Length: 159
Image 1 (cartoon, rainbow, N blue to C red):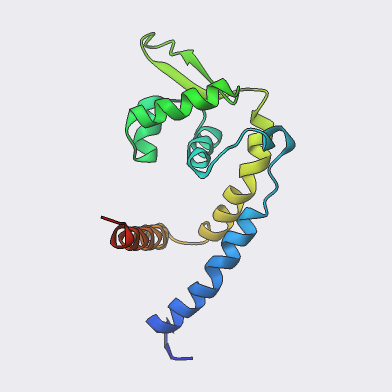
Image 2: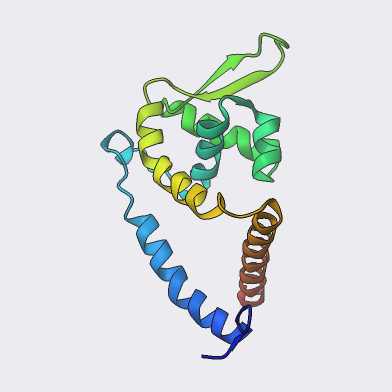
């Protein structure tokens, strides 16, 4: 193992991460989906939206779109889909009756919390001891990794 005084060199870090990532994904996949949600056919695209609503409370479509970094029309489609399944509800914004506030229904909130809280708790445990600068570096590193994986998808896409 080749290391520098302050940590592993790039190749050793890559080896460690290649070992770690499949274990992390495997553990995340083993988080049991509550019975109330098993028949809902929820996909990864729903997880971030539900996580924001669980952690931050009800939000507008535009707020969700900004946080998810997608178009408001994409969020509207997801909200419509999840509303039909009685997972989300739309209600009028009392401050501006033209806007709709999106929230998790009271009946589904416990199941959503049971499902998503272990992941949020694990991330909190991982990042809480870090300084704000270290947290930014950590998140930026994951974003660069995701972008690099995306470039690989583009390179493999058929013409």
